[in-house]
Length: 203
Length: 203
Length: 203
Image (tube, rainbow over all chains, first blue to last red; front, side, top):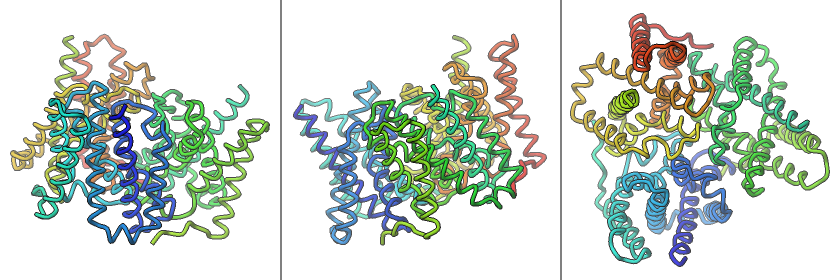
């Protein structure tokens, strides 16, 4: 119960963060208010929606709980009202984005395992949950998805997700397993950005 | 029974109209006959397909009733044979397109409510049914979806769908509720185009 | 049993072939290792995944059997290590690609029929299985899908799939029906390429 509340809360925060980031990206494109809201919406729930469709968990998550809509709307209005603030707080946004990615990776893994899928498939589902909202966002605004080109964004999800699966074999408390994983993902992302690392592009 | 027949008939007409509009757009791109047919097909059933996937109503609608395929094929051949006519009849096409959008919004709402989803989710499902065929069409021919850029296309669906939900609380006959909603959507669209309105693009 | 093993084996080979072709295409774009792997993955399983979603067979195929992941990974590493070889062996690759298309068409038809869908819907499902991985691949790397523009790629699937459905009415052994269909698809594709045919583009 306690653990479920924690997961639920962080899921809503992750949804909010992704909604803000979707809105901010859309605001750089020639989109009207509706278009930008759809992009924010898809960024926020796209990954989890694809995960639920692949698993067969329908109606998909956000359709069964209107708090997700609220989180997205708050994200859109926050993006609209505090755009300047968010842009000045790039580092904070990066931190929130990393937290969102970590949370969505963990939640995707948990859901897949609950459907009795194998750990390796669960890891893929976690990564899809975390990165596919961004893939859909980029595809809809007609760009090659960022995650395919720069930053070892998704690789971090895979490695972090792998760590989380390993921690699941320990006796650490569930909340602690999640915290370790998210801290790890944040640390790796900061390390990657500071060192300006990226996966070698294939030639 | 009577009401179901009405809905069924207008659904097929909406499918036909969207198929024609998909074909006409594809004919401006360098697509072969097959490619243009696929675009017509996706324009016609894309929105309803996404709605059914999200809800979990599978096999999706058009797979269970071949009359939808017939409606699409008639649309493709009409687009091919009477292209000039359709292009001269822009206003008529706009009217049909508005009818199609109204119908698909209503049908999406009805289906979602039948699956015991909340009214707000039903409204989103109605809008997805109406506009997502066009979004997929534009994405596949490599353009930023029209609905994200111009015209308050989708906003009209949301407002019209909201009206339809309100009418559902009255004792008006189902057919009359549908007619009022569709006339409203057509009227708003004409008003928007005549006044050359669009949602402010965010900066 | 014997037949199932045959189908299973060719399905894995088809997955491998499509994975290689996805990787080779991705290697011409500015994608990092992860991005290219995702493209390979989507090329390999995208068509079957869409088919399974539309039919409602979830979790989708590759999530229930890790041999598909192995086939994709072998395809990625083969593409990476033997890129030069594959590029020199264009004709062999074309042959494999045709085999893959034939196999996926047949498997899609079989799966749809097993779900008691009509033959015409089964034919569409077969074609989607065969070509949609490529459609998704092209859309993600921001190109109008090849299949919509050149070569009568998908038409071959439809015609080959139609032949397969007709053969199903005969008393020929299942394996023989598959072989005839695949040989037919390969022959038609070679004929089309040699004669440099394509469907007329609509104007």
